[in-house]
Image (cartoon, rainbow, N blue to C red):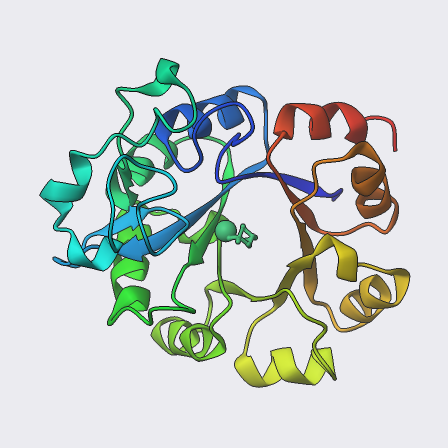
Amino acid sequence: MGTMIFAHRGASKLAPENTMPAFELAYHAGADGIETDVQLTKDSIPILIHDENVRRTTNGTGFVQDYTYEEIKKLDAGTWFSTKFSDTSIVALEEFLDWVHDKSIILNIELKNNVIDYKQLEQIVYDHLQKYQVLEKTVISSFNAASMERMKKIDPNVSTAFLSSKKVPDLPNHLKKIGVTGFHTKYRLLNSNLAKACRQHNLALRIYTVNRPMQMKKCFKLKCDGIFTDVPHLAKEYRKLY
Ligand code: G3P
Ligand code: CA
């Protein structure tokens, strides 16, 4: 199987990240997968947002964890990107899964719990994925190693990946200890040794955030398992060339 193209936060170059328009565009661009970020509201509803604070991607201020779901749903999550998206709101994980579960597209659900370690996030997300029967087509990832260990305890069969933006010494053993079978890392850390080590140890290697043609080329040539890109429509075109 070739390199899977994941739309990073949806097709986030064309629409506001982690919103339904971005996910719909990713699907229509023919992305193989969608990557999205999950955090919890004050009333423990999983929602899709990258930052712990709503300021950058909505018209609100303050932390996600201080909003109830009803309050956070009222925020405008589109105008910051373009006035075309002024009626766009934050998406609940449930809403996303309801839309995506029967589509032929794989998922990467990133638990955003490396800054705020939300209580029960793993179980809550797992229960949602199970309810919509998408566990088999989902990779769950996090920068928080303890969280991935907790996820493996919930279900040893779930596909998990550890995220790191830094070089990890003794990578295969580190990942083995956490119990993950995938490694998601920054493009600048990609080289042939990393690709080789992952292949040797049967670890899936996926690279973020790959937006330039030259970067895509390197990922495709090194046969990375996946890339996360804001421009899935372009990645699809470039993949044909390699
Ligand atoms: O999951 C890959 C990538 O999304 C991790 O970084 O900051 O974009 O969530 P970030
Ligand atoms: Ca992410």
